[in-house]
Image (tube, rainbow, N blue to C red; front, side):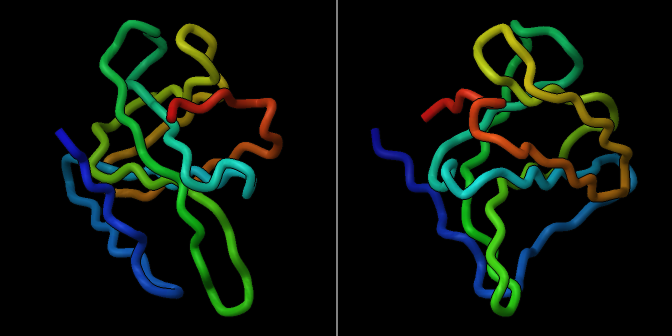
Length: 113
């Protein structure tokens, strides 16, 4: 079975909505992670179901940033995973809002590709 991963939106655009029941996370990462998948899960439980997102370049004028986008997340604490059992960072996602966070160095995260 083949899974098709859609390409990112055009330069300077990102269609991302929120509602009263959900929020979203934009995770900025180093360029070295372009094309990789990064997993997150609710809370701190390493055995919880994980949500992957692929890292894409995001263009805004002459600037380029790399990020993974997680829409429609339940309100609460989310863990970005460094490895199967080691967290890289935790973030709080409030409902109705878009949260941004970032990782500064590649060694902070082992990606799942």
